[in-house]
Structures are given as structure tokens and as C-alpha cells.
Amino acid sequence: MIEFRMPSLGADMDEGTLLEWQVAPGDAVRRGQVVALVDTAKAAVEIECWQAGRVFELLIRPGDKVPVGTPIATLLEAGESPETAPRHPLAIIAQRAATPPTPMLAPAAAPATAGPHGRPRISPAARKRAAELGIDPAALTGTGPQGAVGLEDVEAAAKRAAPIDRQAAMRQAIAAAMSRSKREIPHYYLGETVPLAAAMAWLVARNAGRPPEARLLPGVLVLKAIALALREYPQLNGYWVDGAFRPGPGIHLGVAVALRRGGLIAPALHDVADKPLEQLMGEMGDLVQRARSGSLRSSELADATLTVTQLGDQGVDSVFGVIYPPQVALVGVGRIAERPWVEEGRLCAVPCAVFSLAADHRVSDGHYGARFLAEVRRRLQTPDDL
Image 1 (cartoon, one colour):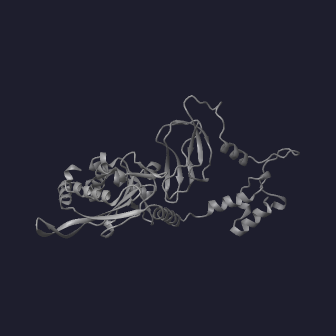
Image 2: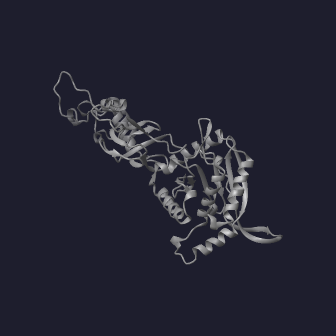
């Protein structure tokens, strides 16, 4: 028996609300299949299942909010059958809660929504709470005996009616995650001014004759250079978990995306070091579009092994970010601008950008981080090799 639990989609997620099941009991599930849509503080996210099996029980219903790690479904493994599999305790509890007690001395009657004189059947506590919330009891469907409206029915109706202030929830989630990061992670910061004359000239030549939608942007060169440098400096690519460093399963770069209505999200581009630039450009554009439309997958929110934030388009010269736990490093990139530069004894104007590194002192030190930034700089001087 496989327990499928509410996944954690980052340090800023403590709970999730099920919006929709995309499977039903009896359905076969393959690895990586989307099985549910879950609402977090930041977005509605497609949740993937990474174990193969057959759905046995769905333990929560759409609208239920549960903490991360709560079992939400069970799957049968190969060789197991519904006839012999034990029921999950949460399924039994949910069934009991949904089944009203049957009167022992009276015959079963059809549910009634109104009492004497046409007034709705409602408990005193529920009536008081409905008045406080401005809810009309006559508009409620009761789940109690004979269709009576109980306190839980009023609270459920209030929850459904309350508009979700997603921006406020997102700000709260980001603040909680970043507060935890600054409190628990011993940050150190480094900065490096990187000349980009070779990279920009290469881009101009590569994009010549291409339509705008097919052109490469400087940001994709930056991501590829960082990914290739991480191959040489793997202590910056991974997680701090249970008091120890755990290397990342691949080089999956979180791309910080500013959302149109405010807030920030950093979904992952997977296996960046192994992909050609044109493919990365297409995937990055798709990822940004889906992040802003709220159609990301759980693996894109949970898999990033290092986050990159590029704020050059906002006009800032440099950015020194806060590490997103459980990651152990973050790279910031400022705007590309012409700056005075000495080259072979001559003073000239060269396009440059400030690259910064925020890293976890429990895993690496300044010497290691400085060598990493030097490797990123070296990679960007030979764009043909990216």
C-alpha cells in the first residue's frame, strides 16, 4: 500500500487546499502523472505522483485544507487487490463524519430543510454564528439529522464565500520563508563584475536574421554558464537537510519570476547544463508564462537545486538575495551596462554585469564561492562553448 501525501512545494508552504482530483478510485497511475490540483499561497499547482500504482482511496475532498505531509490518497501496489487491502484510518474517519447518525426509535425520514412555520432547522450556536457572519440560514444546506444546519455548515459556507487575498497570503508566505532563511542559514556574500563584451557580440551575431520570438536573450547564457560552473563546484548545488548537505539529483535552476499582481515565485528549469541554448530559451519562456498564469507543476516548484534572480531589466546594478531553504546558494545578476574597463593597458567602455553569490557557510566558504564566480565569469568569455 502506497500513501500519497500532500507534498511540500518549498519552504514557504505549510498547507495546501485540494481544488480537484484528476484521478478516481480504480484508476492506474504512472510515475510523473498529474493526479490533483492543489492551491497554495502562491498558485494553483498540478501535483504529480512519483510512484506507480492503482488508486484505492481518496482521503480528502475538494475544498479540504490539510498540512504538508498529510496522507491524501492511497494506491495499491502490484499484486494488491481492493478486496484484501485494509482501509486507511483517515478514510474511515471521513466516512463516519459524512454519515449522520440514524435515529434508533423512529423510521428513517427524508432530509428536511425547514422546521415548523417554514423556518430552517438550525442549531442555536449555528444561528448565532450565521448572524455574526451575515449569512442567511435559509440559503444553507444542512448536514445534520433531518437536514439540520450545524455550526460546521455555517463555517464551511463562510469559507466558501470568503475571497482569497492571494497577494497578502503570498507576501506572508515569502516573509515566513525568508525569515527562516536569515534566522537559520549563516549567509556569506560575494560579488564579481563580469565583462560581457564577447557574450553580447556573440548574441548579436547569433540572433541576426532571426524573428524576435526566436532570438536568444542574455539571461539564457547566464543560466547555462552558471549550470556548467556548478558541475565544477557541486557544493553549491543541493540542499541542507537533517543537519547535513545533500547534493542535488541534477542541476535544476530556480528562475525567480515576478508575478504581475505582485509577489515572487521561483520554478525550476531542469537539467540546465545538459540542454542546448535554443531549448533552454524555449523552456524558460514557457516556464515564465505558466508561472504568471498559475499553471505550474509540483516538480517545478520543489526541484530547484539553486535559484538565480536576474533583476537587470529593473535597472538595478546588483542584487544580493536571500537563500531559499533548503537550498544552499543563490546567484543574483544585475543589469548589463557599459562600464569603464582596463583591457591590455587601455581604458575602454565594456558591457558588464555584477554577479553576486549568497551561500551557506555550513556547506562552503568564501574561497570556494569566489572560485565558483570566477568559473562563471570564465564561461561567459567563451559563449561558443555554452
